[in-house]
Image (cartoon, rainbow, N blue to C red):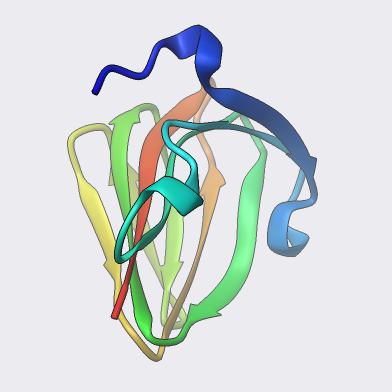
Length: 114
């Protein structure tokens, strides 16, 4: 199966999970078409924007950072991240991410369900 970019749904979310600014999400595939995965999206955070802290239950979320840099709060610990790194947030853990750089922070977000 090939999914064309023009067939992907893109949305802008303001204050996503209570985070600062607006976040652009392009859903690479719809959740209804995936098994054991509820999110597969490219997310772009402009400078200063972020996704607020939230917890994951019965799932693991991965952020695959493809461009830019930022700060992830991983279970209360601030950790710098940059392109080429992966953030894994398993069941019972919480995280947030904010773009602290001067260019867009881009990542692929994947949520795998149990």
